[in-house]
Image (cartoon, rainbow over all chains, first blue to last red; front, side, top):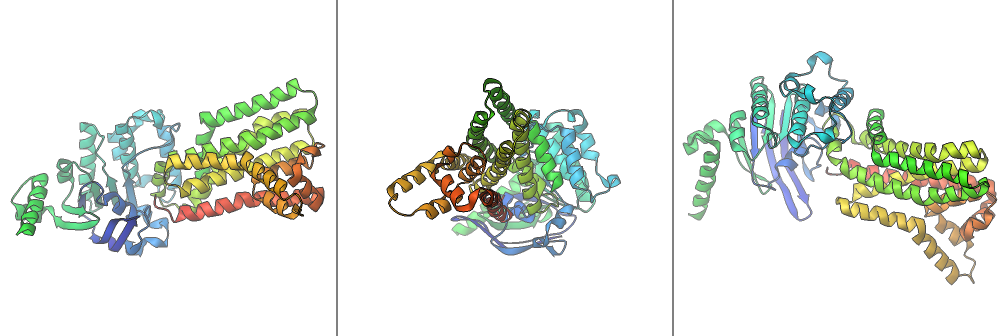
Length: 242
Length: 255
């Protein structure tokens, strides 16, 4: 569904993405992890056309993303920072998004997250008065609202309370089961292991490893994702020393 | 584009700064006509307001608005929307909000107390300046990544166009007064939208003593009717050129 070929991006002296080659298929739920500043958000934004790579190509559904914004019909995005116009009411925001997406018919809206996160209860509030977690709930239900084939979630659970956290994770799991492609970044590995079947570790702008959780389990003989990652990184370090 | 400009416009109508701007202009507009019985004098005061307060408010607020909307712009652009369209919508939403605040703030008292060609010229130059300074604000905020720098640049640009440029022009004319510099002055005045707006209005009033040298040269060179067309054309360029450069940058920018 997504093909990333030889993508490079520099910000000044810093090489943020260094010859990235990745291919994502449907049914995958990818945990995109790595230290701060390793290029996770930049990579996601490149797929969305929000960051323009210096070189390389990105294809979504077999079409280059340079050919116009229509490919984004298939993508739901949850940004890392959610900031909406302060005076706008929540229901107004949904109306406005619906107005922008006249390509999606009314009966194909996916309202489950909207309902389960109880967005209706905040409908009359202004977006400026919502807490960080509530904004994240709004943003999550918007990302799923138009029932996209691809979901790109940038730290989706960072500010959520335990209940909303579970609701969102359940939703991501069901998206995974219905053969969608989900890409999630987070530093909360315990959240990620419940919602993903594949791990990509970025470091200094390049792909350090790209493995399914199953093969990670076999390689490291651990059951927890955080232990697997640590074990893998440590074994590589000792290899490097020898 | 219409949808986007609607969103921005409606958001701005509820914004305290825009409402405050409208109230301030109304207060000055109605107040001046209450305390001064000669409308010709009032119009000169309102001209000063148009040339000083309008550019300051527009450039500073539009800059802040752009930086504060960055995350929302990001979200909108994750939908299937062309960057070009989004940018046009943002520009028109902002410019229309300022233009309407100005038209209703100063326009109502002007047209009620002094319905005349002068008033119409004053209002149209105010409209041009609203659009132009919105475009200038977007030009700077799309080029500068840092909000504090963007704000600083907005203030500097305002100060330059509002008084520094005039001071330098005066110095230039004083230094070279022995030479035939009329044409140079004429060309130099094109580089300041506030100057052109001032000339456009004053050519139509009886206060031609306030034209200044650049205005006098202008009137002399073009005559007052061609002068009007020329100044309107220059003001349009001051809307279109910053807008085009800002849009070009916005389309290629990392958000």
